[in-house]
Image (tube, rainbow, N blue to C red; front, side, top):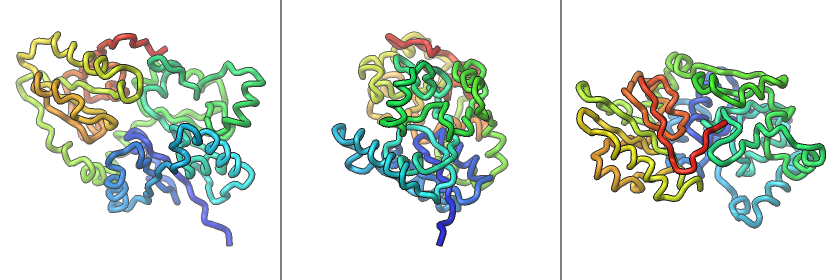
Length: 335
């Protein structure tokens, strides 16, 4: 008996979660796969999705894919096993990020169709901080291409024939992107969609977000003062900066402004612990926002006078009347 065909959408960021709800609206047999290693509240997300009648499961790294010694050979073996013995029930996948679990590797190898999701700021630029975005690398010689196909087939490149569509969900970033033009040179469909308009007309998604992020309804903006939102980023956690450098970029900004007439909020990134900023929060009397993705501000019509960011995708939302970039030591322009 033939298995029923399934489609997976892999969610490893809140941006991907928003896209998951958008695509779920129009896809049958779609399963939302929550990355339990990324989200500290993964179980809560899964339960809220199921309660609101979304088909969702948790996905976690296997021990042999965690070890620095065994993970690369394990990825090679798993991916190539399913290359020869594919799971034919996997019809399509929506994907972004590292193939860090057995299910991701099986799906990547088995499927014939991949929709590549918007993963955030780095998705729009070939260079991010001091890293090169290898997904858009196009200068490989024939030998390198051969080696990559054999040993690193699980690492996607935009030219991969399985990729049928590449998603861009931030129209402001798309206008200054260095990768959108690269995609335009090949026969790939690009999709830039307005998630606010799409999800506002999808009550099931709105109910899910209200249940998962109740603090959205509790944000109180000042009616007389200037409302400023500092958008933090996990530069220390991601190895882009020391802890001191990560904190200093925000404290330097706070030292530079006159706090008269300002109500200042600090939005903590999901991969950061609020304790990291405890001294700054106390010193500058900041109002802390933590659990929800900033994309929710547009969805629920919450507008700040100014956003402060190093290079967060969220800084390009319509919920900010003004966007100010601050520089961190050795911060390179994304070009």
